[in-house]
Every structure is written in C-alpha cells, then in structure tokens.
Length: 182
Image (cartoon, rainbow, N blue to C red; front, side):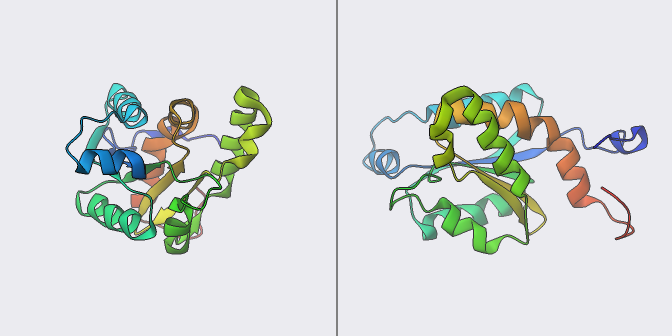
C-alpha cells in the first residue's frame, strides 16, 4: 500500500514499545538471583532504540497464560503502543504465548505471520513452518508474537515491525470516517 504524503507527515515521531521475553528457564534463574542473559530481548531493545523509539516496559516471564496476560496488562499500563512478545510461539506443550494472546485480539493480522514465515523460510528452510508468529490489535495496541531466537527477533523487527511502527500507531490512533481506506 502506498502511503500518501499528507498521512506520512502525521505519523508519530516516537513510538512506545514493550518487550516481553517468555522463557521459564530464564525467569526461574532470574527469580533465584542468578545473572541471566536475555539476548533476544537485548537485541530487540537495541534495534528499537536505534530507530529513535522508546522502550517503556521490559519484562522476562515464565511460560504460561497467566504470566503472559499479567505482563500484557503491565505493558498497557506503562503506555506501550506496540508490544513485542518474544518466545512461546513454538509447538511444545509449554509454548502458550499464542493461546494467551489470541483470544484477546480484537483484530488479527494474518499477513504478519504469513510474511514472517515466508521470510524465515528463505533464511532457515522448512523449519520455519513450526513458527506460530502472529500479530493483532488489543485495546488499541498492536501486539506481535515472535519466536525466541535472536535471528527471528532481528528478522521480525528489521524486515517488518520497525518499518511500519509509525504507520501502525498512526492508524490505531486515527479518528475519522470508518469508510476511509487505510
């Protein structure tokens, strides 16, 4: 879709992000006071800040519907406009990020998951089909669910999310004719 100049001028300069890494093993180690690494979360924060955007909330939580939804609520209260969940999108019994988020979505963006898997396939081959990456809107906030690998986070942010972040927030905050195109 071609963006019209008058729309681009109205895009917000700063977009407020939340980064939530979902990893039971890292969350347990952190709770025990161990010094843990969240490389994927660190990469996400670095890429977001490089674009001049803000990270208003960051968390590391265990897998589970309750922790995911509690952290989502905290991110919303922190004022996040785009929330990135990292991890819990695979096919193991512990991977429930999608099950926690999907029922809450008011609108689902199927194209995000489709394009993400297509781009992943070009990088990693057929294993890309195991990703349940998805995106959607909840309480006027965009939510993206990405796999936990650093390469998946880089791909999702650089090739898709960060390129459209300002446009996404503009559309979510836009007031106007319901029949106008977006």
